[in-house]
Every structure is written in C-alpha cells, then in structure tokens.
Image (cartoon, each protein chain N blue to C red):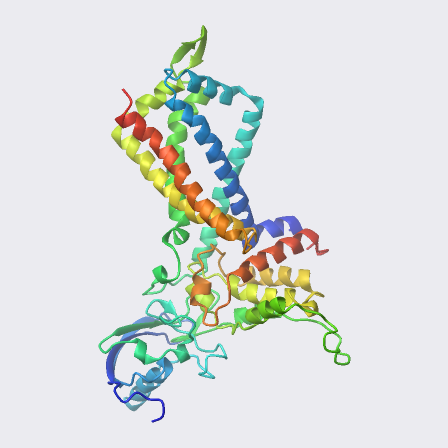
Length: 261
Length: 227
C-alpha cells in the first residue's frame, strides 16, 4: 500500500464512546475494545472499523459527523481524550492519524458539549446555531455589475491576508467545544472580521456585528474569558486577534450605528 | 430595551463593564497600597492615623468612595450574571478534559479567585473599614488633637497568626486574579496591538506580583518584626 509504514504494528485499543439514542434520552459512555488498528488509519477510519464490527454483531453503529475527510469541510468533530479534534494541533479529527496513539491506550470520545449544540445522536451534535449566527449578518449585499478592473479596489496585501486567514474558518465548532464557557466568540469574530476588513463588507459593517453578536447571545453561547483555549484548539489556526477586532467592531458599531433597537 | 441597556446586557457589553471596573479597581489598589506604606513609618502610627482621618473626612475621597463601591458592585454583579450564563452554556460537562493543554489555570479560575477575594474583602472591611468609618476605635492624641487610632487596630490584628494567614492567602489569590485580569481587560476592550500588547502583558504581570507582594508584606511585617 502506497504511503503506508511496513513497520507499523497494529494496535489494540479501548474506546469509551458517548452513546445517546436521541435528543430526548440521556446518554452514557460505553466501552468498546478494538483490535488490529493500523497506525496509518485516520481516527474516523478506526471508528469505521468499530462500526463494521458492531454491524456484524447486530448492534447499532456509532453515529458521528464526517464528510470530506480532508480537513476542509468542517463536518467532523469529536472531543477526544479531553481535547477538541484530539491531541494534535492544527488538525481536524479526520486528519488525526492513529500513529499518535499507542497500543493499549484508552481513548475517550465525546460529542461537543454546549447547550447551543444539542446532541442528535451519539457523537452527532446540531450545529445549526452557527448557521443562524451567520444568517444574522455574515453576508454582503452588493449589486452585481460588470467585473471590476484589476486594481480598481486597492486592498493592501496584509489586510487581504488577514481577511483570508479569518475566512478559513470551517465552522466546525471546536472553539465552542474547547471553551470552558462554550463561547462562540472565535467563530463569530472570524466571520465578522473577514468582512469588516474588506471594502465589500463595509455596507452592512455596523449592523452586521450588532446582529451577529445579538444572535450569538440568543443561541445561548457563553461569554469570552480570554483563556485562549479556542485558538489553541482551532484546527485551521484562527487567530485570537479576530476576537479583539470583533470587540472593536462591536464597540464602534454600538457607539455610532443608527440602530436604536 | 433601549440600545444602551441592550449593549451593556450583551455578553460583550458585560465583559466591557467587567474590564473597565476591573482596571478602575486596579488603580484603587495602587492608591490603597501607597497609603498603607505609612504603616511602616516609625512614629507610633501618627502619620497613618492622620492619613486615615483625611480619608474619612475629605469630600473628594468620600465621593470617590461611592464610585469605588459602584465599581465593586458592577464588577461582582456582572461576574455573577456571566458565570451563570457560562455555566448554562454547558449543562453537561465532559467526562475527560485537558484544559491545561490550551489555557492557563488563572484564566480558567477567575470566578473562584474572585470569590476568595470577595470573602477577604468582607473580613477586611468588617475589621478595619467599619470601625474606622462608623466608630468603635480607641482614641489617640496627636499634637493635642484627638484622633481615632486605626493604627493600633492594624497592629493588634496582625499579631493573630490565622489573620495573617488569611491575608497572605488572599493576596496570592488576588495576584493570580490580576495576572489574568489585567491583560485580559485590555483584550476585552479590543486594545490589542503588536507594539503594545507584549508590554501590557509584562507590565500586568509585574503589577500583579508587586502590588500583592506589597500588601502581603504588611501583615507579615507586623507579625514577625514589629515589637
């Protein structure tokens, strides 16, 4: 097999997985032994192996979110051994490989924990609260005319880079999961600052931050204590600087916008 | 709700109040510590008692006293509101957590540290502020004028070992509270800049340690070295 390590020995692991039938029932951690796991497998492939076993035994397979398995879609989640997306920095769960674990390890796998992220089933949580925040203002209204000439809208490279870095947020919710307050500040800040920095986002600049922060509070996320856990666990490295930009945007908007409500 | 109340009842708005009152309370600590340094003057407490008389009777100080109480009230009230909201934001906690891998202990325990400081504040006010302000102290004559002897109350209080211990532990809690709080307040106000933030962080650390050390030395000095 191309790219595989011929010296890698298969591992036997003990998994403690959160099982929950649906939103309305209580869940619990259930222990499953898994055998013969290749260190070349991704974490999700390891769960696929367990699910195959469960299906053969006639048990309900473990539900977990996943889509691209390339670390770009933001669909996978999982709180692994006390860390959002597991122990590796800058890595989504789908890109976390089993070589970071040892034979005989016990791995605890839990869903994102937040009031705003109710558990659908097992490890799958409803993250539509983030969509509703986005819908509250994370867009630009521009009349689509002809394509503007290159260099007609001058944007300094540093600003464009910062906006792009903020725009790399994949909306996975790891920031909420890692925060002791289940705060969505890093997510909201990335979505606000990417647009606030660019001329296209100026139209709704003040109303956007007011509405997105209001929606963030309505959804029941906690407040920011500046622990920095969110940025430390973010798989795409969204900077804490965005949260400060969000605060400046919020203060400026509240002080100068014409919205009285 | 008007736009104003809406702003300051949002999570970001409440944090702004936390940060402004927090920094204001830091400025109070400096004034309080400088005043207290007069306890070290070898004059039988004359300077300290005159200072305490001034603090209790000067009109500007009396007005600032109300502002200070308001600062504490807003800081504590918003801390309670935010803590309740934060707890409600995660009704079911994780079975396994490794927060030490992504954040500092003090940043995660501001509420606990704040509670220790609040308990200390109540003890401290009860023992010194209440008698100094509302009567209950002995008299002392300085330059043929009678004053209340707050100095002797300080001396006597700090002969009690467990009282000294409460003070030292509380000042350690305050130091950790400030180590996170001082720099965090600037972040909360959005005052973040490549040029200044590293300085603010270092200054905040030094400020926290030095101010709390300054306060802690007072009971230690009176317990061990004052005869």
